[in-house]
Structure formats: structure tokens, C-alpha cells
Length: 140
Image (cartoon, rainbow, N blue to C red; front, side, top):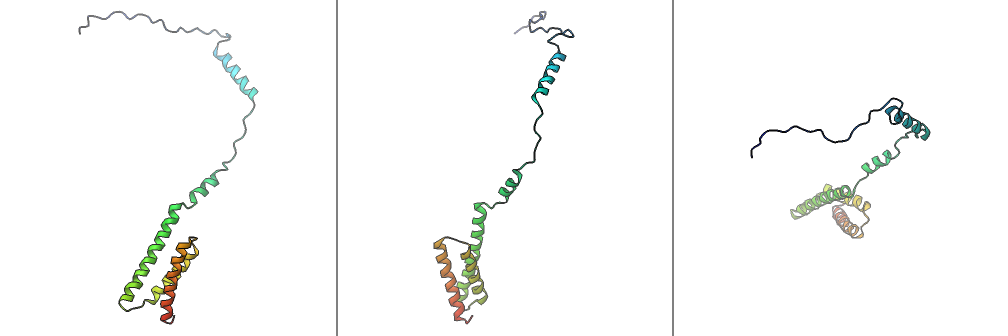
């Protein structure tokens, strides 16, 4: 495509501005005066108070969630399973680990006090009974 010269740029017929005359009703000063008078008539604004909800937000952040409680329970269960494995291994070799049995009975008692699941309480009661029976056999 060949461009052969440029023409003159014509004047646009866009919006035209009125020149303000001092004292005219459309002048900037009269607009400011009317805005200031309307603001004065509106009155003063209320003062800013302290944030009352901040304490509630902090309490929500510190509240334990369901996964935190579950992970603690899983950790305690893994500890008890390790202790039960130690007891099983020791019984297979003919040894009775008194300290492990005492620790197991104690941790089961603590766990039973913290749960409200009846099935879990029954299982923990059986584990505690078995540990206490083994301790009674040894005279403890």
C-alpha cells in the first residue's frame, strides 16, 4: 500500500469550555463555598472507637482445631502401640519388662480419662487389665 502525502489535520469539533468569569455562579469558588456550607450543615462525624473484635479474633486463632486434637490422639496411640510391641517381643523372649508394663498401664489410664468413645474405652480397659495382670504376676 502506497501512502501519497499527508493531508492537513482539521480542527476537531469536540467539547468546548466556557470561560469562567469571576463572580459567575458556575465558577470554582462558588462550588467550593456551596460544598463547605453543605458539609457544615451535615454536622460532625462520630468519633472512632477501639476495635472490640480483636480479642475475639485472637481467641479464634488460639482455639485448637479438629486436626490438632486428632494428631495428638494419633501420636498417643502410636506410643501405646510401640509399648505393646515391646511387651510382646519381651514376652516372646521370656522377659517381662516391668517398666514398660507400668508405663503402658499409666498411659492407658490417662488416655481413658480423655476420651468419651465407649468402644475405645473398652479397648483401653482391656489393655490396662492385661498390663495390670502381668504386673500382678510379677508381684508389683
